[in-house]
Image 1 (cartoon, helix red, strand yellow):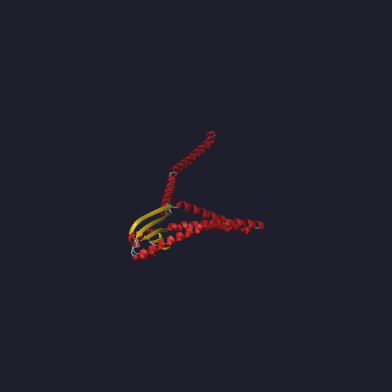
Image 2: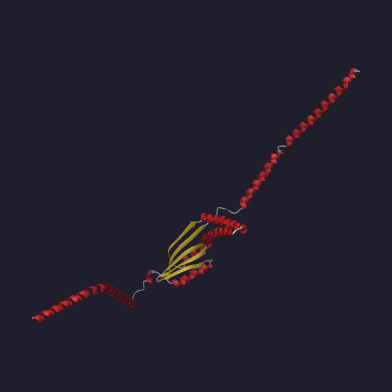
Length: 284
């Protein structure tokens, strides 16, 4: 009877032991399975990161280059030609044909100086064409990097625009006359500065887009020096006579005030001397 009483609790303990063993085995198998599966997550993460890096790299490769420099190009070209008028018209025609224009022209006795604006991508082509119009005596090119100036100017323009917008928003919320007057004054000042910055940016951008070419067309010295022959000698003699006459008149005009100043006392002394001489004769 006592053995039967002890058998019940013993069987219960054995059953609990078996249950706990099964649960621990299941837990160990679950842990082992989780450990087996766990390394997959970092692998997937690395794969996704590599994909992201690849996309980023491809995106960077497709983005426009940010290292482009802003450069102002200028050139000077001296050419000897027999017919300055004809070649000058040809320079204008070829400049306009390249998408440029004549900015300034100064004509003098022996030739002319022309300043033309040419799209920078056509500059070398136009210089080659113009060089074929005569005998080139001088040719030069210069470049000026204005990248930093343009970047700084555009950054200041963005900041100034944002500042102007903030002031306009404050103007809409102004409640008193003093606030309105103060904001208007500051807004006018910043708008003026913004306008100056925009003009500067437009000027620099225009100089970058269009190169400036100075073309000097000169007649050859033998053609320019045509002061020979009878008429040339006659005109030369007349010019020399005119210059001598102008010099003599200038000298006479310079001496005349001094002559008048000395003539008055000299005349008075001479008259006094003649009167004394007449009085002596009368006394004798």
